Image (cartoon, rainbow, N blue to C red):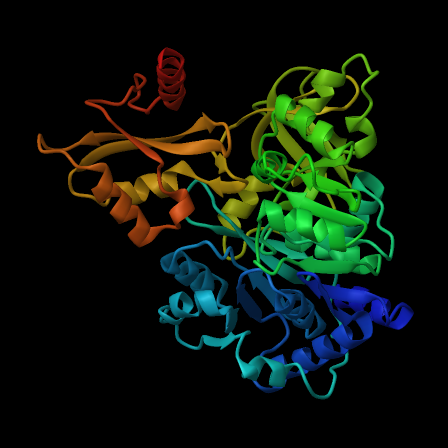
Length: 510
């Protein structure tokens, strides 16, 4: 089993179908794309001395090369390590070192940051240099034989320890996810396309696979990311468009001045996920764009595949529990079992909140080089998501909270302890607690409650500078609240629930 065979099949069956577009322009067809991928795969082995299972990192903005390199790595029997392009150089350094990557492909804007990483044996190639085109030319390599359990994608997702963990996603995991798109999310025709406005290092990149399986086109925005005006412009050019978007992207899209007047008839589906979508926003999006929204709930540990809610269910306004269903994350996808467990993982009754547990062929093999975390997260054969939810009698899951205190801002995951550890580096900071507060555009914003060590205290500017030296910009607090003490229970544990109550009270009184 090798995911690269999806591309080989498309090149054999539909060599003249467009495979990749950049902005308005169709770039390459499947036949040419597969030939470039096969040549790149050979070069990965011959020029860089890589061997089966070695890790190849992608520290890149969205680009046509991203698509090629994912498949080239798989074609050669290697493991891809896509890295969030918004990370700080020190975070790049940790992931590159922890994954033991031997080669890293970078885009020009990230080349300097990755070049500052001093890791023995790591080589870098800029995909915007002429050298890259040389690698994409030459003799093809035969597709490597891979076992279903071989790791295809090492997906780094933050954890409560403050250090990212590498979820080992196998060829079997991702092929099952691919088939799940067709059974649970949407249909794809050969003339359709997927627009990568969200990072290809995450969910949007994983949706490359079902579109290759359907012999459909990948569209990379010229900007390399999300821009509402550009999205509406590309909708006009490329028919049958599917987009994976975080809720904040959907909100910004429908709030764009172009939203009411733009021609969105070529938009087929927006699949949203990665954070809470409020019912009011969802209704407004359907009003502006039409009944074109579908939802998925997944995690890096079970990519894009825990629950889903189709477009048909979104538009079923006659159902007696329509509002409740819109507020849910849908029903279990066909390839997995989903249940809500109590303190001892026992299945809870309908409507009773507990931890969401998942079992199936999409669940990761475990965490890279972390057997203790793997055993804890996968105990009893079930993925313990850390999310708290409740199931109704019809199998619709509603998420209640996130037991790990995860903050989701603009579709990006932020773990408080990671931010807290950085803030505590400042000598004037005695204690700190980071929480997420509701934000109308981003879903949540990061707020830090800080207790100073000295009477002189510390300024928000100093803490901002500290964060920018150690973590990605999007993770730093948007507000600092300086207090004399943090609320704690009898055991000395900080009560984040109390801090959230204080936030809500202050907002109500504002």
